[in-house]
Image 1: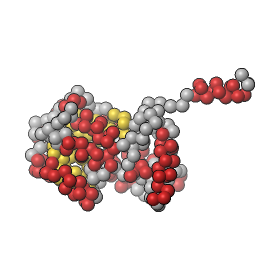
Image 2: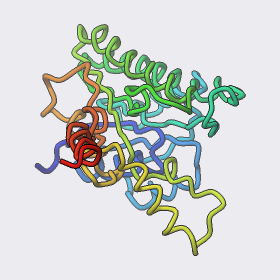
Image 3: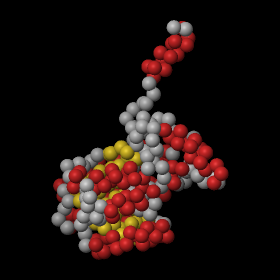
Image 4: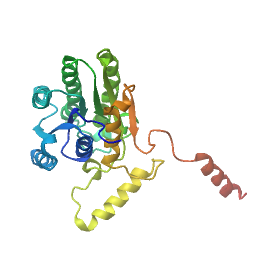
Length: 279
């Protein structure tokens, strides 16, 4: 379908790169006017320059309540209304494989961007949507780390788990105003955040990427690394009128990672039995 967001106004936070940029590109292609919010001014302004009058950049630190509220006001003043709020911006925490070594020094910053910011963004957007008569779609971008318990990155996991629960609660609270709130749950998406490329050079980058891919795909039923456009397509669906009856969901975009264990343990057991017993 073409023109799925014709006449709609959207905000995409973290919109200058990765999943955010892919979503901005798609939303504009589908007829939306978009406010691109990010802390990367150069990338944000460059993107908007390519997209023309349909997109405008606004520098925003999602951990700052006043800046997030001003972002919503800016969108309404610039385009006259707000129909879609995509709280996509997120940051990772320190890479400590063992929780006992984690300093937790980045706790406030990570939770500020990943949870507090989307809460403020949801509230400010919902207030604007209510003032214009109700209706609208709010999307929050979580992660499989917020669904699956696991080792390492405890602050990140906690922030994303909190975001999923908040999104469901907000969906219940805001339904009376016709406002839908849904959550996206990406996993193993190929973005700079998941690349771990720091310190690598051009000579070993391809090998590093290949080895990291193998690790990511080890627990994923679909043996394909996701890309930002995959998440953008899911965001488009939830933002569009096609999802008019959908609210309060956490939509996985992760190749089946959260579905269950992809290992056929029975086959492994029978193979082990055969080796041991020689049958």
